[in-house]
Picture 1 (tube, rainbow over the protein chains, first blue to last red):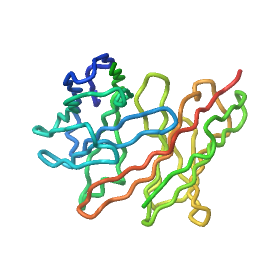
Picture 2: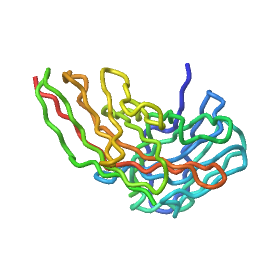
Picture 3: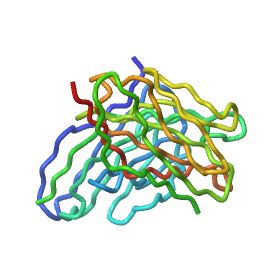
Picture 4: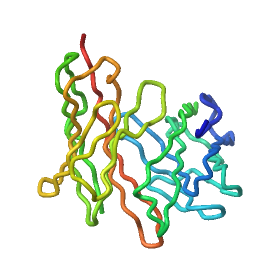
Length: 118
Length: 116
């Protein structure tokens, strides 16, 4: 089954304790992205990756890191989490088309990771 | 620059009546427009997308949206609401940056409530 898998689904941690949220897709998609969802704000892009070893900042990258060492995996790293990073996080992936028309493709979303930083 | 405004944070309808969820956008480029649905405790799922083909776009579950360039709108409609349509709906505009990267902008969401 084609899917985007995030782990863990729920995480409670304390300020400053490094954590990683994993994301894996089995569709051989080039493009992957992380979002956070906060009440009344919709989804905001944190980081995205065009392909292996190619990453770039989205709208709200502060306090986050990502890596793309393999095509299928795109982990989100919080080196020193703070309470303002309490949120619902989504990973998504998209295939690319000839000419890089990624914007015309749909995104496939994971089920989300609810993070609480105390 | 681009932006998306979903004009209603909540829409309440009775089962069997029409649904209208409003979305206005602004973009300096020819936009690609999407509607996504999010059911409780689930990820987002694509309903439909507009990518400069037909201006009336049909999606899944009986939803459709009409792209109106003159009004910069992309409203989502359904003739008859079903209880299972109760969810959060997001309008999204995207553009491709120089180099091919992809910048989506999400609206703040509209919560659709369906009464029996």
